[in-house]
Amino acid sequence: MLQINFYNPHLSFNQLSKKFGNVFSLQYFWSNMVVVNGYKAVKDALVQKAEDFADRPYFPRYEHLGYYERSEGLIISRFGPAWREQRRFALSTLKNFGMGKKSLENQISQEAGFLCSAVSSKEGHPFDPLFLLKKAVSNVIDSLTFGERFDYDDEKFQRLVEIFQESMKEESGFLPQLLNEVPFLLRIPGVPQKAFQYQRASMSLIDAILKKHKETWDSTHIRDFTDAFLQEMEKTKEGVETSFSYENLHLVTVDLFLAGTETTTTTLCWAVLYMLLHPEVQRKVHEEIDKVIGRDQSPNMLDQANMPYTNAVIHEIQHYGDIVPTGLPHMTYRDTELQGFFIPKDTVIITNLSSVLKDKTFWEKPHQFYPEHFLDADGQFVK
Image 1: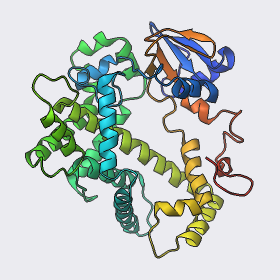
Image 2 (image 1 turned 120 degrees about the horizontal axis):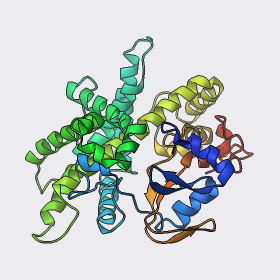
Image 3 (image 1 turned 30 degrees about the horizontal axis):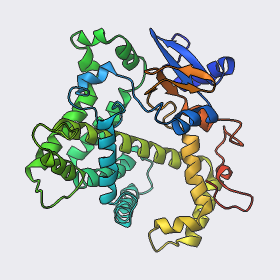
Image 4 (image 1 turned 90 degrees about the vertical axis):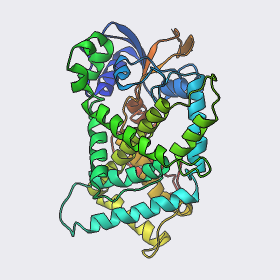
């Protein structure tokens, strides 16, 4: 345990893999875990043997936020019928409300217009784009989840965005890991309040939004994801066991907001930074935009096929940005084998995703921002 940097664990795992190989066990406090590194080993685990590694470990600290009592949400849920039911529902419902369709594309385009106006209002003065990007992304997720968008100056919206940002910071570092492994510390007065101050606040805010939304709910007019979930709750007969409950609606909405807003915003922030740091890449992207789209109309997804360089840059931003280096822990659903090692059921698995994105056997220049990773010799996009 003392060999692990709790703020950058992936760097520690990279060093240990040089000595012990791409699959090694790690005594973490008093638990044994298995760390998986490198493109081949991680793909074998998460793709070739996806169900074997599909479970999640139990996180004691999440009990204090309402998980596990009657619901688990989508992200930290144990693998099983309830998770399958919620995942299937979330995917089909989000698709019904435009995910991957023209209707959502138009919504994103419209929100991009509001974002550009907000940037223009800075009149050339320096500013941190983080909160503007976060508000734009939050509005798109908000429209899918609650069927509304907020003005960027709306005080309630600003508070929501700030609280979600602070709650994500409570997920990293030594204290969360310590509380998971030594859960009796959570019984000490004041510790849960300090450890989960913003996560509790974000859940209270979502709860208030849901209760207000429920007051205007009409089963004959489904406006958004929340309405669709409430409809499923209504369909459930008395005594029938189901994962559709108000508690689960609460946790699923928090999951959609946290997972969707933070990841997308962080990726866009890296995009802005990489364009500033690599003006020659920015220039080529701009030339391709001018050539294919022009300056008098908004882009659409059909343009992507004619913009190989821009597409390559977008993929390289996601590759090089490496924003969730280890992901969330997995757990083996059954006894399995990986790279010749036997791994018993209920073993906690850490997948070092960063090691995949920096794998020297797979990437030509893993430690450089290099859009050519996604281009062939003819300049065409390669997935």
